[in-house]
Length: 115
Image (cartoon, rainbow, N blue to C red; front, top):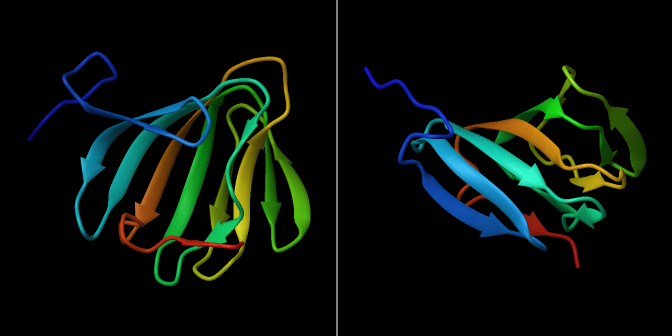
């Protein structure tokens, strides 16, 4: 049994445009991450063939594009993205966006960008 926190020696990674992430759990069946997006950043529209994802907003407000619709998700709210749904997260606010991202199974090798 392991207790983890952002201050623990977690694997850090960078993604997108100056965005940061930390792996809490990275297994084939489940991935749990803490991610942070600076103001004005967004990710590329994509989908996952097998993984569903749950985003829980810890700080800030996120705009999600899901299948062509924009959905605002505020602090202390979450959204579940089903497999094959085209989606992306955007931070159009003036503040840092911080959220927990759970993927089941892990989306590590299951990301398909929409070009």
